[in-house]
Image (cartoon, rainbow, N blue to C red; front, side, top):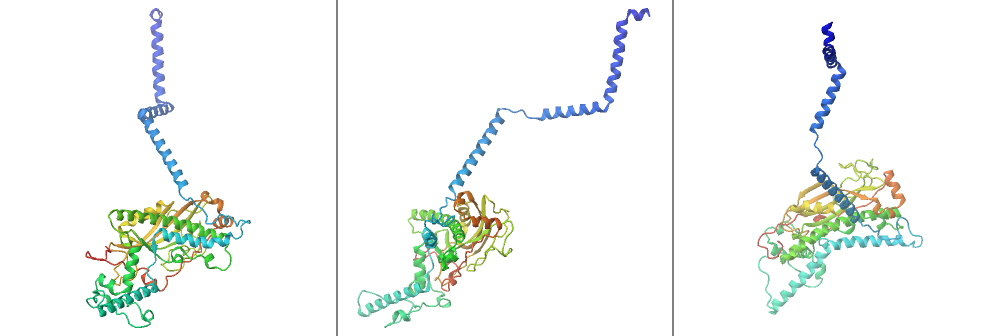
Length: 455
């Protein structure tokens, strides 16, 4: 006891130490303590892995924000620039102006005038018609008769044509009534292009037509659609005029894109001291621009066939467009419309042609079908030049921000779109007998030695 009393401090300190060691051992073995230590360990590890924010990261984030802001501004600017739509007549939409009830009767001539302007913008014409070929044959026969008469009289130094001429103009009265264009086919085999142009009026006319224009088109009703309001004897309804107006805006976008591409290439051709013509330009033939319909949640009408592509010359079905891979549908803010474009283009320029149409609006290509344009030995229809040309059918999906034209949009059309019953009744005329043989006429192939200048 004396020792304990003498060393009481040491005894107490030792007892406390033993108790502490016992408590630490018990604490380590307790499950809650283990869980707390595990949580603390994971937090420490995550903190060790975290990258501290520094000036470089802040600068990169600021650059990203600035880039995204610029892209948003560019998109908004593009939205403002695209679709600067204006109706054909200010007193027609959204309803006929009571102060100008005759405005509805002005819509038809304005629509036809707009279609003719699109043809002029393309610097385009149709292929020669039988009537034009007959007139060319008459003029050619008269010229040959004059040359023969001058030769018989020994005047003018004219010489009869050398070689076997395939054109024998009748002499005497009733010349124009007796003339016919020499049939094509086997009778033209083995004849050079130069001799064909001398002997056959249809070939001469076809070559001259190709040299005059940048692009071929069909009749306006065949290329842009025959709207019922154009042929009907009654006055057009506002909804009818709206569908024709909406289709016209789409067609004007496409024509502007195609004409712009051809004009830029034509300027490059002129810079080479050459004369631009169909054979040297990328867009050679605009066959039609068909509006297939609005993209509804559920296609109406004939469902499976509504809006489906048709062969050139067939009537377009009406109803909602068939579903697209984009899954885009009409909404109160955006109208989604499907349309197709049939063209003959230079093969290597097809990607650029598609790109130009896409840039003309918010247009997305959904389907591309094409085939090679084969050789035509007759040379009397469409002449596309010596480079490979293809017949192509392009399907597009257009997204139209309704705010750009909603102030003109008739309420009946808005209701029809919501109900899924809005229809573009754009009938496309079949090719006339005169144009039918050449609607898909193959492109001739020209040789390297070509005095006609058609290469």
